[in-house]
Amino acid sequence: MGRQKDILATIEEHLRIRNKLVRQALAECLGTLILVLFGCGSVAQIVLSRGTHGGFLTVNLAFGFAVTLGILISGQVSGGHLNPAVTFAMCFLAREPWIKLPIYALAQTLGAFLGAGIVFGLYYDAIWAFGSNQLYVTGQNGTAGIFATYPSQHLNIVNGFFDQVRG
Image 1 (cartoon, rainbow, N blue to C red):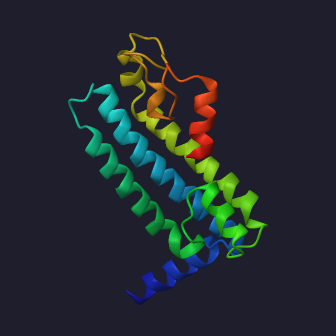
Image 2 (cartoon, rainbow, N blue to C red):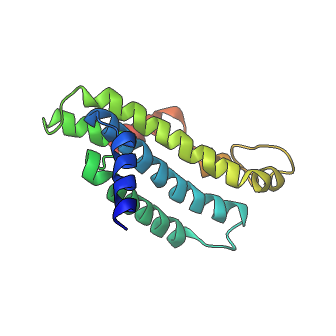
């Protein structure tokens, strides 16, 4: 047993990332990956089953679980921001140095793309079958809403602008 602990300690020492900022960026990347993987995965399940395997509450619970898990995974290392807007707010309030903003934002964006890529890979066949081998953004067979939000078709650009600015 003592020999195994020595071997594990040696492996840990050699594999440990010594640069704190790199560790924090990787934690943000992993936390955001988890958020997008579980969140968008739940949306994919509902969209591709046409609502037979869950609904609105399922998505809300899944995203709540995903945020919690992402923060638990990255919180002790980086603070668990999981979002460039949160990182910007922390820098603006002088709780984090500004040098972290571009690094965290890049890591979070990479994590989000990786998470979405995993969801796309997991549901690849279902996504293609859903639209009869065509990919649609909106409409009855639209699958783009799995990965992003889009304005309603009736919304004009002025109202959309005020909706986003006013919040």
